Length: 217
Image (cartoon, rainbow, N blue to C red; front, side):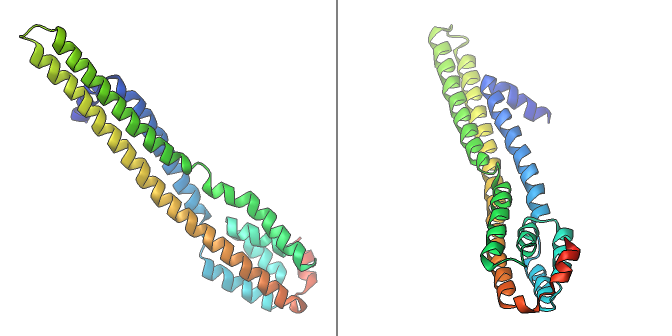
């Protein structure tokens, strides 16, 4: 830790914007990871449960299972099941409306990680250039006895900014890749599952007991 602080101090003013972008990136990574984890659901188990309930005509139980799951996929399916006594188009419209509310929440703030990675890298580059300018400017005006010290100090500032800027960018980009990949997987699961549920409702509408829907409502 002492060595890290020493390098941070040697990096000069350019280290502070890099640190700010790093903190923001880590905050977003933690928040998005928690949200995506809570939003995850076993699609196959969920669909098997929905199929069982719909084939049995017990749509009320299916709605209760969706409420208990408390995940974007479950909330979207629940919106459609609540309209199961309406025409097929209204069932689909209810799911589409719920999807418009839920899907942006999954992708919220993730894109900022790529921006923060670029900002950290550019801040490191700016600190590097600034350090080199200071180094050569000091060498040009310094006494012969202190030129080596001035040059070494400026180069140290430049290299520390480069290293920390790259480190911050790498962390942000890894977080972006992992979270974005998981988010896309969730979106694919939601799109596929909602289509399957709509098809189940449409093809088994005659089996559905509307009394259970009223009880669930």
